[in-house]
Amino acid sequence: MIIDRIDNAGLYAKLGEGIAKALAYLRETDFAGKEPGRYDIDGNLVFAHLQKFTLRPQSEGKWEAHRNYIDVHYIISGKERIAYAPVGSLEVYREYDEDGDFVLLRGGGSTNVVTATNTIVAAPGTFLVFRPEDAHMVGITVDTPKPVRKVVVKVAHTQ
Image (cartoon, rainbow, N blue to C red):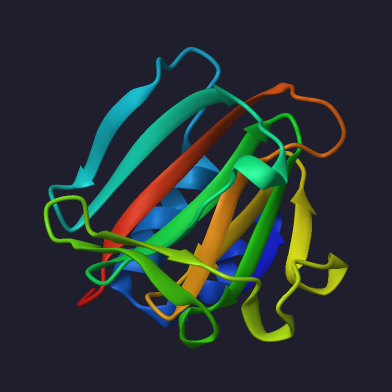
């Protein structure tokens, strides 16, 4: 997993062509007038989902992981708490869904409790990269439920 500011995105271009395309898109795109939905960057190899939603309590969150895509999350507005843990430290809750490319997991990660050591509060301008071995729980409120706008860029794992 990687956490950084979009200003530093150039440091990660060597991670692969798909990651470089995703970060360039996030750095260069003005999301102010864009509506939620899918935006193609490189067909099914690299594409973005612009999202707007209200955060929820952590007790309502679900761990997820992907096999075929790397997720690059970018916060446009609001603050979102995001938890992360190694996939191997969690147990499968819902079997892998090939069409949606996700598996739902449960547990508290390597410490059996979601603590400050495996959560982050992502503010506007923050991006996070989750590889297939990185489980993540997103959409968690920081203090009270508030709206968030974010982009999740999906990068084919082969890119």
